[in-house]
Amino acid sequence: MKIDFPRVYRPLRLAEFAEEFGEEAITVWVNPPKAVREQFAGIVTNSARARQKLTLTTNEATNKRISAKARKAPEAVKASKGPDVSTGEAVAELEKAGGALITWLAGMWDDWSEEEIRKLTEETLEDNPAFYPWLVRRTFEMIGEYRRGGKKK
Image (cartoon, rainbow, N blue to C red):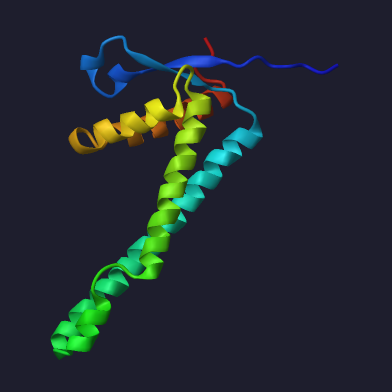
């Protein structure tokens, strides 16, 4: 006999982040199948690789500029200005991972579209940069809590 589990949703209360949110909540799907959870893991892995590549290429470009200035070699300074191709590739990979995360969250948050999540990230980035990462982390934590048997009420 096959048992089909219904989707289970739980509120992610925004007051956990800041009590001023009061009763506002995002409804999170907490029992996605393994394939959906693995998508998140892949997004996190790709994002980490892109961040690492960006850090390495940015450091290399900075080191080139510093070395060139130290040697006072104008051609080396000219060649090292601005991001190189690998930096651009790393930024593109990071943006792709960010887009994949937004798509994943749109599937996890009930009644949220990709466009609404994208707007949320843009609106909170400047004034409250910790909010969106907190939402992502709490979403995944809620899935784990449910899977471990916690908070099933």
